[in-house]
Image (tube, rainbow, N blue to C red; front, side, top):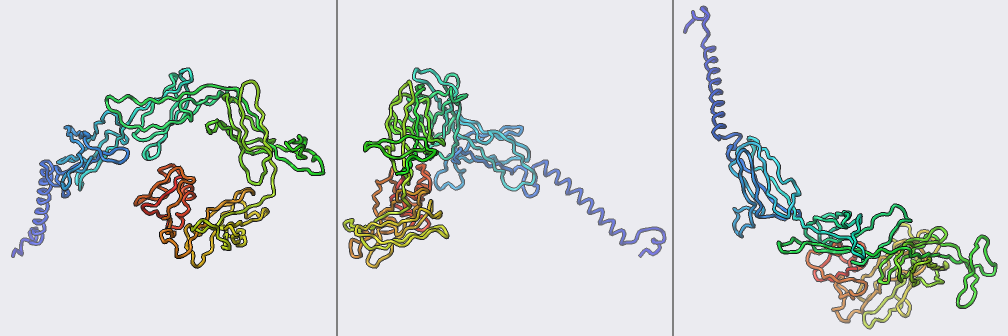
Length: 545
């Protein structure tokens, strides 16, 4: 080789090889950098995505999440691109955009501004313009969405009987049945008695509230004229160019200074001992002569003042001395109604008709005496064949609260009637819930549920009434057998309407459509407890209370 070169300071062959390889790697790195820079400048490939292959996919929907076609969207980044949300595609066209969809293709990385062109009568739910940044190396399209809602203007006027505007009245618009994607709104009438609402399509309920007075002495009473209930319903739908605007009117008549004073007496039978000390009250006289009873003021007793159409004009409870006063009433006829409280005997009628005029307050006394009745449940056992009572049938009541009072089983009498009695002086009884069941007997088929759930009142008095337990002897008409709530109930009793269940219906969902709480739906349709998980079957009749 070259032995003397080492001595003269020349590198060995290994060193020459390492230096040559290092220079080659450096040159290759420079070449890759230059190639990459050129590729970026000329639309080359970065991270597997060509800079001209970026895209934006979008969707336009309304406030009820439904797609909207025909909406114009622009995309700005130096230049302006425009597209329109697609209509519903034809069947079988798998490559077409879905309804309400749009897209921008062949985009380069950068920051873009997307804007939707609002159509007349619509407003944005989400912003109608926003920025999007497309980063280098991104995989897949950027996805965006515009959400808008249609707005319909409804004008409400508030006037008095002489058509003068009434300012500062609060008008509330709240969604009606089926209007699930809206929220209540309210506003006060201006000096012209007007308030304007911008509402989404659907059913709306409008209700008025008078302005709050500075004090009770300045309170003014208004008698509703149009509508008489102070409440209106309107199906708000988009208007055409020639359709008149929505305008509704609340009209009231101002009246005041009518007055009713109610006194509630709880009576005490003093018998032969005469008047009790401390009860400085009157002796009451009835058609059959003087009655040795003395009254004390019964506080906390509820009363309603009803108009002649049955609507409530006022309601309240008596104070500690049994007094209740209704002032600033419109003149005219009313009915004063006291609450019915179990465990009390009425000595005056529970409803009294009066006529309110100017000049003085009308005094209306009510008198009751507490009785010795207890708690009880009553019912009847009936043969479906002819409706006769079935005697000797065992009935049990089981408390649903652990440790509750357990009454003895009872048997129906010759008319099929039974009564389960509870003690008056046991704290476990008032307000307790029981499951009352009939005993199974061979040779009989149930028509109605074998058990009913009832809750005793908080106060003793009238018995809780059960629905009839109905059975049929084996061998009679098979078509009348009880079959999980599929019998033809007499749905007219206590029902405002009857709904025939469809496939997929649920009891609580049906109640929600009619604005009825879940528990009220169960109480009106007790047979549902016999069906697994409260399921409904198509064709079953549902009572809407």
